[in-house]
Length: 359
Image 1 (cartoon, rainbow, N blue to C red):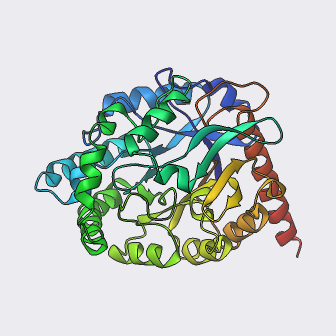
Image 2 (image 1 turned 30 degrees about the horizontal axis):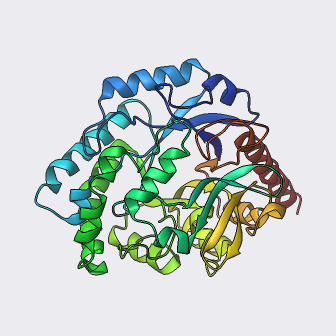
């Protein structure tokens, strides 16, 4: 297992690589190239420069997040083959710089949704929050503008300005789109891309829908164990796997996270884990919170125990953190709370490991 942090280049992050290097046990970062338009090939020169920057800081860059899939691929339009070829070319370029894992999503239109990016918590911190009725009453463009207003000047992956202008039209397109059509388009993409991933030795790790329930009439994909089984059956390659996000999947109260981990990691299909805790305030309402089990409704000890029991040897990162101690940062991606989360998760990992080894 390797503990890493997500990091955004080009000055689009308040956290520096030097600071990440000082967090005990953190060996690398999951990075991205947000300047590249969705659907275009990520240039190998840009990737090499990014890799060199990370390595000079004493860190690894074996994971990339957010090589986003063009909407034409999800819709199954005739133009999809050009964008799929660009994706295949990107996989080759990722291999050239030593990337081993690619986290992506196949969510239609929007990557994620929150009703508030800086909801005040009782302890005086602030965190991202979701209230289902509030989100349902808002138009997606309104959500985008509201979130941008609390983004503190940082970019919001999945809510880029160029995507906001097309959201209403895209949502309308999917209203008469069946789940079967969406699965078929996913299979088309996977069957084209997974052989290239195998050749490049880059494991594809799809991220769950966030939130994991219907929103704006859009198709839902990775929300529970049965849909994950359906997804994995689309392509049996071990390179077709998951980013197991406890915050996303855990938002559904009926998801048994340790059991899901044992099933899918036990089959070698979890390549990356995003570990965060949430606290429920309603059936479909939650606040993101500090990582320890006592702070939320997810049992992080049992989650770590399930990963170890499944011999998980991929990448873990502490997912979204709160804003604490007066920090001003990209929502969810400040330094202090994620550093606390990383050390807590590493402590749990060591404790479980030693307990098991000593019988």
